[in-house]
Amino acid sequence: MAQVSIRINGRSYDIACDDGQEERIHALANYVDERVKEISGAVGQIGEQRLLVMTSLLIADELSNAQDQLENGAAQNAEPGSLSAAESDALAANIENMAERIETLAVNITKD
View 1 (cartoon, rainbow, N blue to C red):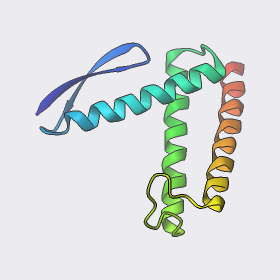
View 2: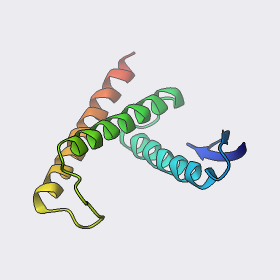
View 3: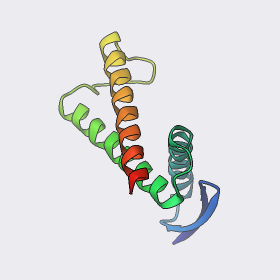
């Protein structure tokens, strides 16, 4: 079993993973870190625990939307840069929807 050191929101974490999966873990950690930075920039400092919860919810929402698209056949042979105008518009609307949800979550979390 391999050991990987990752960095998310300025903190280091040691993660165990299967041998050969180190590069994937680093890529996933970089993605999470970018999402954390994005949310932090949008809502400000709300505490690390809440920030990571919001990031987890956002990523889970992205995964759910991707699964829905796969089930509806919208992701057939999609390659980067090959989105149709309708798919691009749907993606933009999806992003706007997620941004609104993040703002709503931020307001609700700061009330607690």
